Length: 399
Image 1 (tube, rainbow, N blue to C red):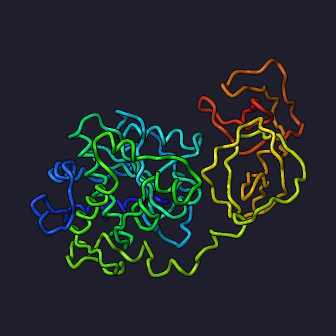
Image 2 (image 1 turned 180 degrees about the vertical axis):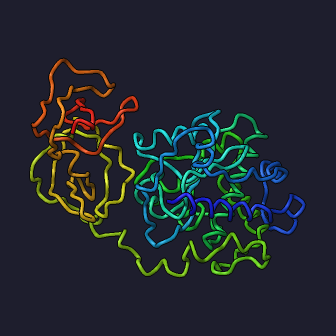
Image 3 (image 1 turned 90 degrees about the vertical axis):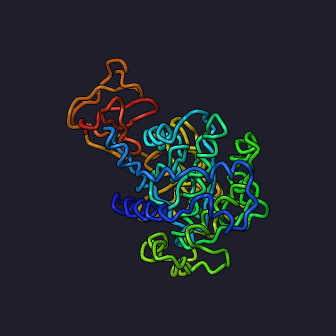
């Protein structure tokens, strides 16, 4: 997503924060608050920080997620999934730096990280991410709550999370509905996704919440409190923002297009996943370059990345948006060049290196020859390489 788009959404959410009412307004909201929620309401919102802006200010290159955006199946998000990081003591800043650097290697990223100090938004919620399995990634915004080590900080983190989620629901004209008991609603735990949608087996944030005597029910109550405080209602009329003019920036119609999500009801929910059998295998291939697993629409799935050297059964090939893919399972595809390779002309004599950037023996590729490279270019110790075999790389400038 372009930086301007992310900044617009961050600005809208920041404006929404200004109408969050203090704890004194609790009497106007019908919720059953726990002691954690009572503590949380005493805290102010930490605000939303754009990850790209934060990283660049610290001299860290922002690795855009835009090339791997997932289009929502109905054109807009249907709710929010609540995660927790399972890394005690790691802050939202720590997580943002780590995922910015490693997300392609771990095949996972989310929209935002939240801790006791505020929210760091990694990428625009206008597109889906790889966080909760293929059944959820094209439906929901996904937010990770960082683990705190005392009750007061836990309450601050939960407070920031609830305010942010309430803002997102307003922004996309969604009503807060707890989905954790029956799989119907707009506020999901990762555990609920595992239970009702499948494609993942994680149970967060239930265990982390339980550590503090807290639950998803209480979190949903807190979201409802802030949603109502921001001017929304829970009447089911999701197309009408709150009456307070200050709430208007949180429910813009232009970027979210809430009136047009039903037209493409889903080129992104094709028939292949419902097929019970695969076609007959056409052969096997040894994967040379690490490969992300895609569905038949060319959307990245939550399946683990296939590693270089893996022997794959191939069930056929398919062009998706002009790019060739190989089918490796039921609604599972990899980019063909990761296994088939692309012939390239060698313009300079070139040594061969391993994945650590160390030269492998004295063998050379000679100028004037044609050699197959696999997948896209990779960086090793800051230099660009093409992969020519399992754990064998040649500097890109030699081709």
